Length: 75
Image (tube, rainbow, N blue to C red; front, side, top):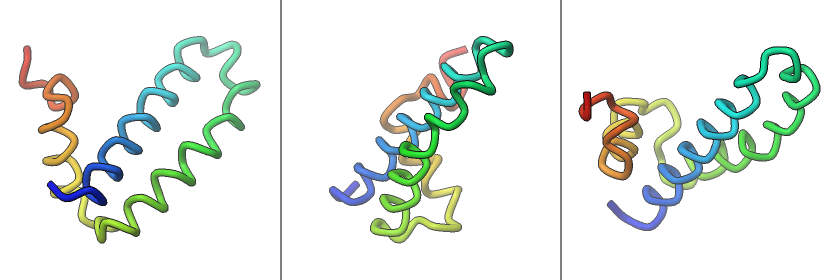
C-alpha cells in the first residue's frame, strides 16, 4: 500500500467512525449530521488522490488490511 492509498483508507475509516458516532443517537443525529461535511470532503479528496474513486473493491481491501474488524473477519 502506497502513501496515497494509506491516506485514503485512513480517511475512509475516519469518515466511517464519525458517521457511526453521529448516528449512535438518532435524536441528536440531525444536529450533528453537518459535522460529517469535513470528513466526507477529506475522504473524497484522498480517494481521488489515490486513484480509488469508483474502485470500492480495492478501497475495502485496503481498509480491511488496516482494520480487519471492519470486514467482519473477526467474528
